[in-house]
Length: 296
Image 1: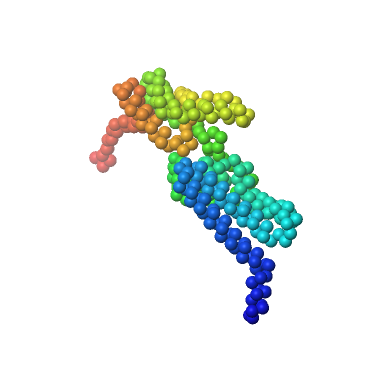
Image 2: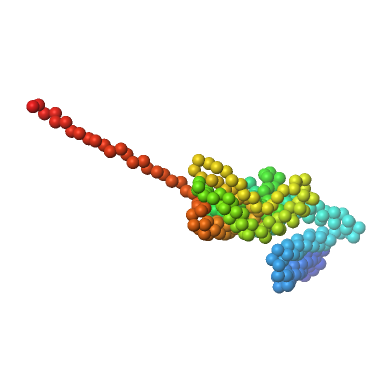
């Protein structure tokens, strides 16, 4: 390549625009990294920190697309058209994110998508990432698997949100009590225990449910713990129903059961847990007589 060809190559407008795009990309990327690092150092609340980082990254993408459009716009009068094209491209790129918003879940929510249950740990342009719970692990505990689901999936299957506008769940425990126990004392013990262990959840849930009735067409309901008694062939069934934080079902149930057992033991047998009992009936005595069959 001679000097003339080299000069033509270096001063080619297209080459200059490509160099400008590369430089612009490096500048925008550097600014995004600096801003993200500043957020990491200054913002302590994890949820807000994550959302701000995502906003910075998204702004960087949009800025780069707009920059490319401006660089390759031949005339200033075509700026409106160029921005319109950039807007259309951005809207297309973000349609999956909009799909996620339409699905009514956000970072930190516990959802079930197509039979897969987990906590939302990331929402990208194309996919939502879940930390799976359940499967071979009981009690809404993490299985350890990371699941990535296409955001467009929200239009194909129902989305179950465990923590959206109402971050509480109703849970129940069923307690078998022996016949002959003092059922009134049993009910009082259960009411005292469940009130003490869930009072914090009940107060918060009551406030949130009040806001729910203003936002949705749902009826007023009680979030106070309730106890119901039923009889069956073997024992008395007490069903205790209460509200609980969507992430604390197992730990709450453990505390409730432990305290109930402690309280029942203090009654000295007045109230006792029932269990299946199998009674083997004695067989009648067998009178076996042998007759001599030999000829006399």
